[in-house]
Image 1 (cartoon, rainbow, N blue to C red):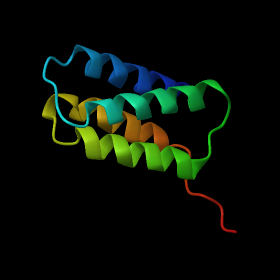
Image 2 (image 1 turned 120 degrees about the vertical axis):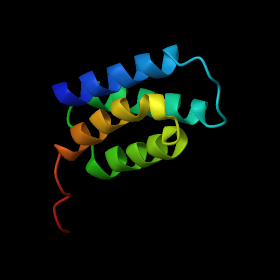
Image 3 (image 1 turned 90 degrees about the horizontal axis):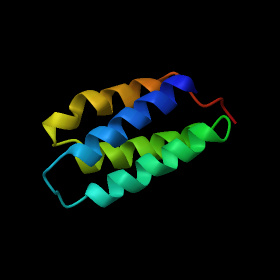
Length: 86
């Protein structure tokens, strides 16, 4: 959880400091907020984590200045592993 909180916090700061507006910025901000809330309130559900990650990646994936932060969030989500069957 600590890794997810830290990665999300860093990417939120980087996004807030990024001077260029882009069409899906609000989506990224909303989903980062959702990830931060999930990380603050216990173990989040893996499908919801992955959905948020996908939306964030889709909305800021083309902004190279945010690529490292996005990679860190992805790595933190990956620490939760795979969803158990059934």
